[in-house]
Image (cartoon, rainbow, N blue to C red; front, side, top):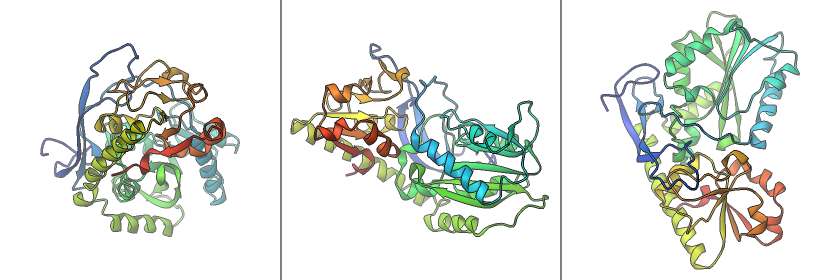
Length: 370
């Protein structure tokens, strides 16, 4: 794809590693009474040969996503991250914090103000600059990182949290590719991006969220900061073994996409033939491409339950599947509830015991692969 310029280094040498064809904008949830067809756009991932950044091809698509509810797993991970940072001494002596917000929520500011760090609201520098799943939403990755490092005060630290490309390849999470998510970071690519801005990673922490997320702490090369911890080298070694810069390894996501879509359709058709009632849970943007690729409609999946009231009365992009309130789980007593956000499993089992009390089963959609 010679016409695409890397969003980080501007290089034009790279490979198209995943092409899902035209897909509806995953954050555009039409009203149930809107018959469509919904607008669709190419959904492709390109891997830069120069800096190694995996990225979305195409221009930004503006869609107003209905406000979702913040999963407990995301809240718990933020608490865990702040505790680990404090235990490792990264909060000691720091008093000012800047947070670059993510459209998906998950602010750490409350946790950090409880530890005596004051938010900087005037655009000035801070001792601690945080981006948790936010920077990936910027089409211009070079400008986005430059904006963040510019806010780091002398002696300060930049914290970047991301869903790692190593995880995406290892678990076959092909539907991490979504409109509006412009970058898919390996630790290897982020190190290159940081070095081009005069920063180096010093320590990293891993979390189970989304199957494997990373929090990276980086400082200016000119600052007398802590030495590089072995945790960074471990991640870089794992990246190398997984082939995060190898277009063949990253391109394995194509086969995962086909197997996942076929597995979902086969399972839903089998449940339908057996007369079992199936509902979905979690009207997440990641579910849109899967449902469309599997050609699932409301005959196979009558509804998807979601806790967000702003999504009720809407339907999934590119399908006729309505989004309904959690009360439906009690009134329709499903045999199976298909969970589209696996991180919610503990939360939903506790919140909706009636599903299992009536003999129903929670089914992880990620496990349905042909």
